[in-house]
Length: 232
Image 1 (spheres, helix red, strand yellow):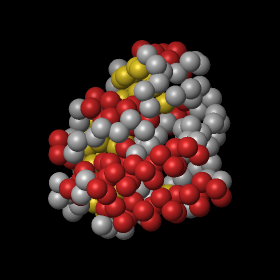
Image 2 (image 1 turned 90 degrees about the horizontal axis):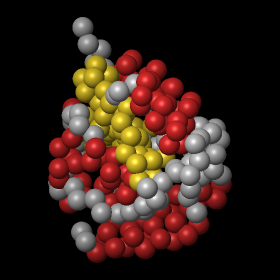
Image 3 (image 1 turned 180 degrees about the vertical axis):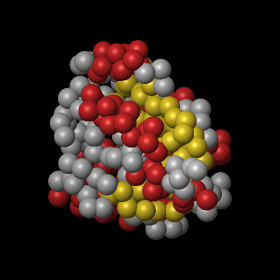
Image 4 (image 1 turned 90 degrees about the vertical axis):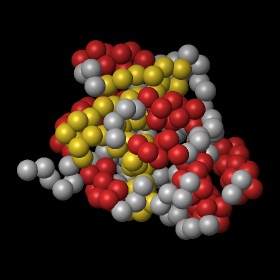
């Protein structure tokens, strides 16, 4: 008998950019976890123009496991572009959008899945969150503004653990090439009359490599939120 939290079909997608330090362990964990939580699964990784050993690691992993598929950008196109291309490449009925930096645990998709019985999306929020204090302070401001834009409180709009029905991807029009992509997804869902539920998810300190988020991204994100507000 299938466990209530076992997912019949699950596509997982995440972008990577120069993640040679953490990618082997991220892929190993995914290959251990996915068969335990999903009857049928695939992993779509988007390499956004990496210049380190990331392309080699992905190629070798895909050769060993055909359920890993790699989408490659010849040059960096931006986080949002990588997320969009990953989502577009998924094929199964439930889709998990996450990150490839080792800070999230794919196991949490099994806890989010029951929310899809009542909602179109299941959105995680990091608790406790392991980020520098500056990032935490900026996130508090950003989440408050995102809640104002959406017309509904959202705890952690940029949390990279979002589980959704495939139909959501057919009802939202994603265009952002940068970190606004999460807010754009939620704003598009709101405009389409879709609903979401929220649950806490695990969050780890970054195990290696370096964050790609820069202070300029925060300012750009705030401007982008204002644009989304005008489109409501």
